[in-house]
Image (tube, rainbow, N blue to C red; front, side, top):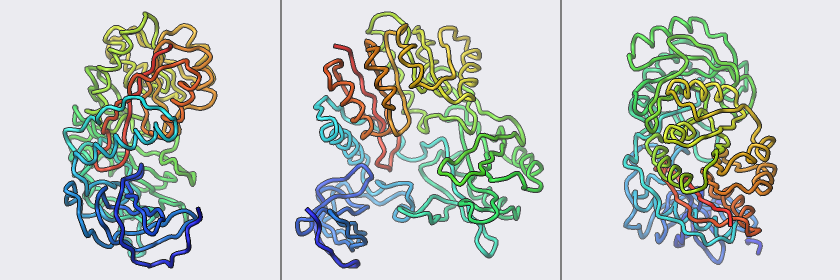
Length: 453
């Protein structure tokens, strides 16, 4: 039913019935759905209409008339403006329930599946957990530098000097690095609206090792004195083991480009993950919440050991984050990954740890999966947010591995893919375990376990 037009700026009062996948509260006003950020289920709120769409209204919060007992004061003073976090106003218990409900609703609505969704595994540290930051930069007309995440729903940077969800060992570097970059007078042009220059500041830390990498992301190399400044940073901060420059000349949402060069120290940090030493480079994928990711290794190991013998295929294996711990514990694993640099790191990590039962192949997963599954009994998939491609799903349905473990950071695409895998009766969905990899946000990681019928 089409929504009647409501003048922008209209102030309305209504009750919140739930929280959606993007962290926005959902309620109804005069039989029309209303979406508003910063609220919790059960609250009575006053909001101002910002947009009147065909079937819903979008509003901004004016005030909370009847607050939820789970409401709390955000830890960050920028929480109401920055788009990085959407649930800082909710208690830890409320966040965990919101995330489990997001997963349940996705499976029920999109996949028509009633599989058991367990309670969300909480994170022992709701702040200071992120081991990586990619921070947009811009220089104002007066020469001062702004660094921060984008305001919700915009490309306007919210200037910050710290971010409480970041590991403190990289958080403490933001303010001094901002001063250094401001003083450098290097051009800054995150959106490539002019002649280009610095675009992002990248920071990465080993959760267990404490080693830090600094990466400057720029559209070009024309940054005079960069090497000298990088050497100074290495001396100034003992925890910094390397400084690199990544060049991304394209006007793209992909933050990092393919051209990286070492400026000082080394181009990787060393981290221990589930008993395995890993080399991690600035541009390669690694889970941002190390401690929570480690919790997935034990259930994966138990699940695959319960099946028949045979190789486990780890599709989208990255640098061997899960392949190597599983192989170290006795399984034979073949990792498939399109990103060549990640495959090289995975192979180097296998050699570093003396693991001879993990093998890695640079390949497009969708193209080779059906063939590789012919020699495998089980499959682990950890695809990007867009989920499995139609070709990858077809390969799985053709080969029908005995066991499938699906790690997902997007409940919607997980539900879509599970609907196809289970829809023809080939697989039974045993369970879905939500894991809070991203406290203070509405994002949730999931581990889904399937067995062939």
